[in-house]
Image 1 (cartoon, helix red, strand yellow):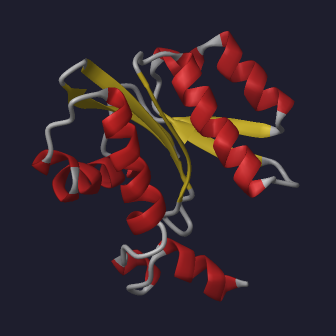
Image 2 (cartoon, one colour; image 1 turned 135 degrees about the vertical axis):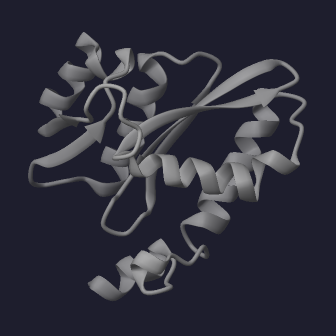
Length: 154
């Protein structure tokens, strides 16, 4: 599952794209950029592909935003043997990334005023890589963090 949200900074908005493994709830790819364009979603997906190195065809679910219907997005998916699935138009309720964004904003971002996009990027890195993936427990994972849940599945 992949999606984009925005983070307010004193420099202007920063746009965060994430790729989440729906099985474990792990954020396997993310990127934060100044613009909400195809580049930010491709960088997040590239990180996910680099981390997971999928051997079989993988389903990537998104909404129908312009970033996910672009020619570059479609080419990247073909090149990496990924299959695209999209939500119904205007339906945010079948988007699991919204749950992650809600947690991120409630647990971290809402409490902060970032001076710069770089400061926001550092804090998002800390939240995802140092807290959410290795420590944040999920009821859907039997109250295990995504890292611990995946470790126990091997």
